[in-house]
Length: 243
Image 1 (tube, rainbow, N blue to C red):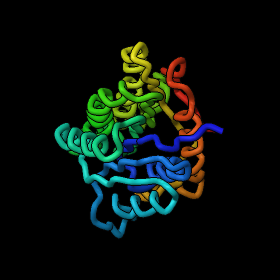
Image 2 (image 1 turned 120 degrees about the vertical axis):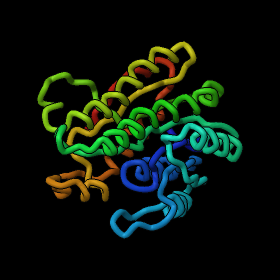
Image 3 (image 1 turned 180 degrees about the horizontal axis):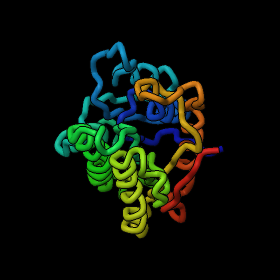
Image 4 (image 1 turned 90 degrees about the vertical axis):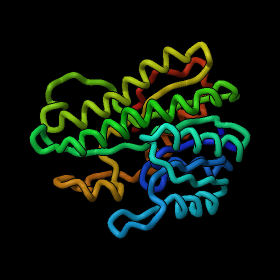
């Protein structure tokens, strides 16, 4: 059975939710995890910090380096990646999990929220990839996995939340472009997206969304584990939908 034992995963926004579930699944194999996220102090509305995540990861069987990091800031990303590579001897996998969401129409989306979504989703994904790629080029089985959807230009996907859709599709375009750009370097660049909503703590903060309809984050973790266990060469540019 394929394993992630001994491999180092750099996960953005992994203090809770899907990112943490992916980290815990890898930790069960004995992987090393760098958690790069903003939350260092407990938030009563949104449980989980980089330190609580680190404790869970180590209890699950992995090693963890928690790093407080705003992925919109390339200097912070560079320091986090360098710290992870120094601690664990390199970076084998990047999981672009961090994402900001606002399911609001054009007139209901303040520009501050617009900038946050583009800063985290597009800029953050690009910056984290840029910082990790030099290390990934040295890895035996390097992967970038981004939580982004296939691009569908039907107007229905834009109508109710055009800013969010554009920001998520920016992540999708990073996958499409980098998969081709780094194919000859042997880096697999893929995306993973859920078929239905996933019940996370963040979902409970979105008006009009019923977390009871969602599935557990572990289904995404199992799908991510399978993708990251595949040989990188010959496995790139795919948009996987979890089943």
